[in-house]
Image (cartoon, rainbow, N blue to C red; front, side, top):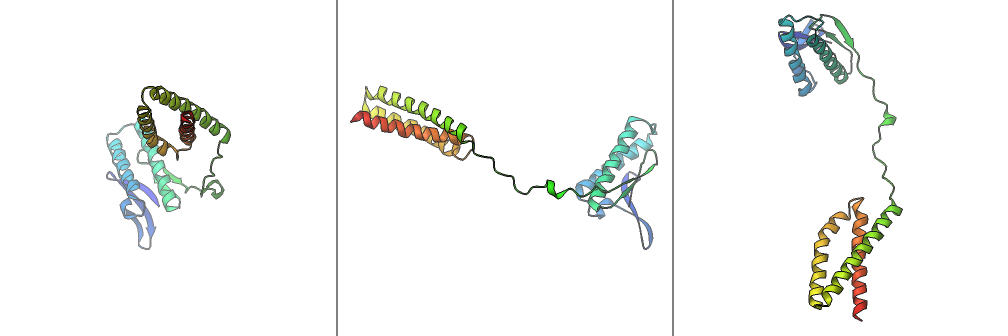
Length: 197
């Protein structure tokens, strides 16, 4: 199979029983993206050749390199070598199909990360301590004014924290903070009940 440019269109030429035939890339199972990329490249190549720019120029080098890349993609899809006629220089190059990737490098499942118990529990304990002190201080301060006010404040604080804690419980890093918040609120309520006795 050979990649060529004919009148601003990319064509693939090959031999069959009736002789040499040129076909449009859209008629082969290359994929629409690759076929469109081939035609875009052919239009640009045709425009560069028609303007008679020097073959050693930057535009010619870009056309040649892009043509080799596209020939390599065709070779990979078709799993066979593809010849490539450079529209600028007229050179004929052959691009081989890439080798099959090594299957040992492909992993189907990622191994789960180990649970950081030491760091996680430290974060939970610190968060629990902060929440406990905050809720107890708030409740005792408001309890001096009115026990009902302290109760309403506790319900509002816990109600405000609950959605964030509920969402954070399934996030790997934030779950430790969520565990600390829940523990802190429970310890604070236990401490407040003991102060009432």
